[in-house]
Length: 449
Image (cartoon, rainbow, N blue to C red; front, side, top):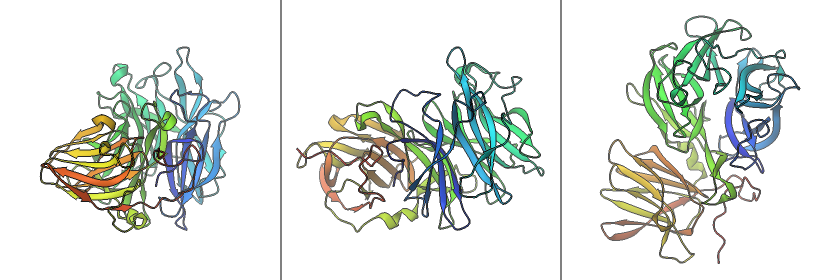
């Protein structure tokens, strides 16, 4: 249910759907390391295909650095490919080098393909098609001009591009914004003042624009400081934009929206891992997580729910221990659910989920808090998913919390409420690639002693 190519980490990505229903993901990829090398780690796009958005098959690199001396000679970062004519167009981030203080110099380039499967790219010219305008955006040190996303203009026949940028009118630490540019032909762009500039965000990365069924717009943006993503809505592309708050919890990042095989809108996102697959390891780039249903209803804030398409990967209910499983529990008071124990037959919890109404948390060995959040309303039902070290919690079906825990042994899920203990039945998760044993495989659990 989580994907990374053999031996590598996944970072930002893009999704395509071909006419035959095959999905392709293009993604940044690099080694497992906490120290990020701007110029050497992300120099190609990996590609994988799927028919269901769950089981991905690696297909090898699909795009790489430009020739020496060009704007994309050192690294290629986040991309946005989309159907154009009989083929595709792709806008992407190119890095030419570093400033004297070590900041990446970024610009946006364009490539075309006669195919629709995410391969066969040829660059448009040798230079970028859109660069940061110093009238509104920081250039050079502390600049941002990456993660382009392009859609049809809802006020004409042209195109609109949004880009992760740094608002030159604000202090660096709160300058994260979504830049705006327009074009009539995809190849010549006019840069405008920011589309969204919150004034309290350090980096607003991976912007995504999605036109909703009623003609209004949804904007998703990843927040660097919190490592989660938020939503904005607007009646028209140029606004006014209303901030709707977090759409994904801390640990979920770089979302993309796509139509699922069942016709519904879903969001996929990345999730981190830890170096050395250890609780003490530094966080590093990670894997592609499974889809969530995108729910946008009237004036309510958008949110993510459990996607029913995942149910085909779940087995029959059991009370036996399972490392990869989904379980539901109704709650009417404070509860703690133990998912794994410190030894195969241990009594001490190594992984647990707790809730006392609005407060929701995940704990690891010795009760260490691994993640927590405050719900808007007390939860009546929790759904918990564990896949290896990865934990997700849904509160009343809304995606609310994630955590990582590389400790413990599978155990019967046990809930304790008001001093009373009872077993929670679970549905084991069937992994798409259960026999993988490379560095990007699902964590297999502790080795019995």
